[in-house]
Amino acid sequence: MNELFKTFIGLEIHVELRTLSKMFCGCINNHFGVAPNTHTCPVCLGLPGALPYPNKRAIEWTALIGLALNCKINKNSKFDRKHYFYPDLPKGYQISQYDEPLASSGWLQMSNVKLQITNKIKIRRVHLEEDTGKLVHKKVNSENVTLVDFNRSGVPLVEIVTEPDIKTPAEAKEFAQKLQKIIRFLGVSDCDMEKGSMRLEANISLAPYTVHSPSRRPLRAGGRSQITKLPDYKVEIKNINSFRFLEKAINYEIKRQSDLLSQGKTPNQETRGWSEAKNATVPQRFKETEADYRYFPEPDIPPIVFTNEEIKQFRNSIPLMPDEIEKRFRNIYKLPVHYIEVLTENKGLAIFAENALKIAKKKGLPLDKLAGEIVNKPIDFTKVSVDAFIKKFKEKGSNIITSSSELEIWITKSIEDTPNAVADYKKGKTQAISAIIGNVMKLSKGKADPSVVRKLLEEKLR
Ligand code: ZN
Ligand code: MN
Image 1 (cartoon, rainbow, N blue to C red):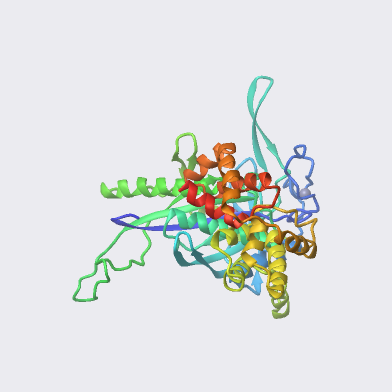
Image 2 (image 1 turned 90 degrees about the vertical axis):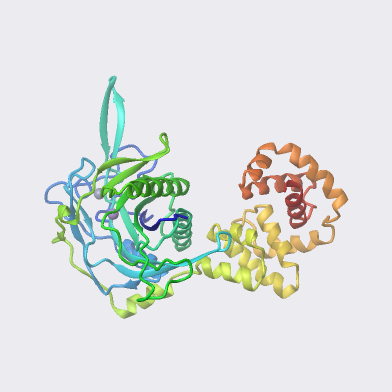
């Protein structure tokens, strides 16, 4: 995507675990929509003399995330103190992990059919730490003040760090979305970007392509050899709270940095933020170096030691992951890509579909029709049993309408009824089509065949 420079993108992703209690105390772990400073105690307020005691479940869940990302679980790990000064951190340090994280050296295979990407992104580490309090900017007695809410202080926070293996902004977005799916399937966090239970940071740097002399090494197609050395600067973008902003911010940074480099300048090593208002990244501060944090082992918490048996148990408790379910949908049930995308959006739906498809395959029912039924008419799979669903599907099968003359009328009417969805679809939001299909299904009182409707609609809107 960039002619002159090779792009290095790495991600740091923070995820809040949904344990019942906080990381180092017994306070309730819920900071969303509750009165400020109601879930606090001397430990998470950082009062002198208070002693932290780690949350066992949070440690186990971090190990699960590590395993799901193909990491090695380290038999010996420990907590460390990471020092910095900020009003939301009353202790003056965050309990985190430095040189012995819970998990390290993993990878995640990216294979997006739509974008035609296959790339293995290495995971450097997965570690556990505590979240900080939250600053609230308010007007009190017509004065602008900043208040601190400590309900979030001490919430278990997992940090996932990739190697700079990501090649494009689109791939960064795909990676983050895939990670969200995996963690949601594990059930250890809701990964809600709006609530801040999943937060994204990106590191970006660029280096010119170097062309080796042909006498020493033959040139590859295109005349550029791979460079392995990282640039000696890196820019970190913080405060990214949506996948779309992540992609936009990285795009902006690549442009900004390549402009500087083209002028013979080196971009500053700094932390920048994404400003939606300016549609740009803006400087925040010069980045601390590791030495500024004065890391040292947390003296109040003993090291964490796992046995082989414990690690084996963690491995066994990992549920079916989205990739495996996707593979089954593709290879065993031969479903079209757009169905697979919807059906693996959440675990409940994926498992419902998998169970229904398994039975349908045995009974010789049309699988893509059945999948279409689940995709196009979102059923409450928590209330309907798979058997009841299959029974209804079989009954309906006899009077399903596939003839295009009848469908044509409903489709024309639905295109008129849903101008917003039609506009969105034409702009490239392919998912908007489900709203139009839903309208056809309503008009037909559920008798239209959704997969036929989809095909006809796609032809019509092209
Ligand atoms: Zn507490
Ligand atoms: Mn962190």
